[in-house]
Image (tube, rainbow, N blue to C red; front, side, top):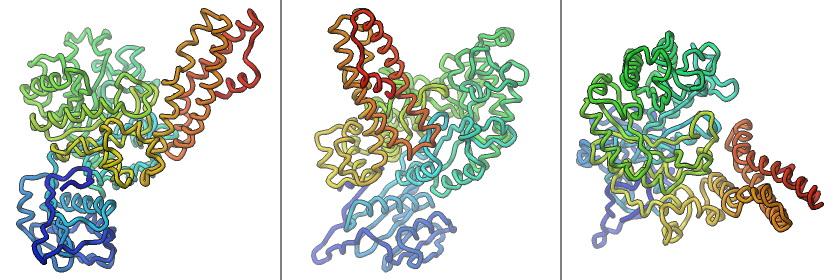
Length: 613
């Protein structure tokens, strides 16, 4: 039996109807059904969610010695159901039938995820199907990524998204704060306008705790330090004057500065087990005189500094993480010197050698006695710096490769990285909201390695967008067709319309900007061959193309203003339309030259359009 659920459950069995024993259907709205919540120890997260589903007056609390259970009236405790979950992660057994329901688990998270599955069923089925679902996670660590470097959701939307993550059974969130963290000892690092307040940060952590999401704070500690090394007191710590984000590990004061910042980050995350130190892409390492004078290889220099940072992180009660890329060319002897308590996150996002390269790196690290987890990407560079939504064909393939590797290489988890820009000073990618499709695909695959990619599009349209007959709508389309389908499906989308409207606005922009003979692709002809036919063609393309761009700008602004703070909205609009203003200026220059030569010019309406585009 197949259900429109994300993640797809491990096992679903319809309950039989034997002879006169016909299953009594349950309505989708369960408010008012009396249930008993039994737990070995109280957990406000479970009681809160149960009361949301059934109503305050209808949930009775009790204790159980070793099993978490939620039982409607007349349903027995089935300890054998919980025993089926031995050795499983976050598992539950949900039974709907006999006029009632029962839910069993061995741990609090399992019961919570069982309630989330029930919630998904209630959204899409009325009456509820008579089924037994036995379900658990294949990977204990299933992580999403929140990159706050450029544009990111408003704070209320961030809190809503954390709740949504738990709907899809994501249990970890890596947060790259950069200058948005409310540093205490290093308060001067806070962004003057966009940093989270201490109260907001507390609410963010509380929301994660309430939804069984573990936070891993990410603090870059070697490269990508533009927001730190821009300060005059730290400029001298750069590897070279031009490497604005890269630290020299041998410069006096470099370790003390970085260790102090890590102490600040750790203090702001008292319940986090891990602290991700970044340490990727330190491109200029080894170039300065101090590095050359050390006599160390680039890799040995890197490892020595990481070890000092890792020791400090461990003293702070956290388990250090780093990215793998600076270790790619390290020898076995150099790798063996890396602190074995450091978890190395291998991130490889594509390419024809992706699987081979990942296997080689995992093996190399493990032979040196190091712990490894994987990192796919639900959004990354993909050779397209201003992408408006993820390059989905690449992202689906990458997620599938990494979940396959997690199974064959017995990895404990996969981080689904989600970058907001190619680097802190770069043009932003599309808004965070446009990446929900691959993010929840990653959740689907990390939870259940056997989840069917072929049905994911239909399941997403059903669960995330609330579309009826989603299976029929998706028939004949591939998993990678989602973004191009959204404008067509928009009139019938019932849930998360704001996201759908955002995607539709991005596609409206791409048609004149990238697809329909954009003016800039043949502007050179007006510069080099300013004949009458060239100028007439340019005027025609200008009139149609820039009118479409102006309409796209209006639609984009309407879509993003509810999702971003005003300053971020302006930054994003500029990132998409600034270059077209430059093309306009060039067109006016060419037109002026043509006018001088031929007497022809852009008419007044065209000039007015040019000024506003």
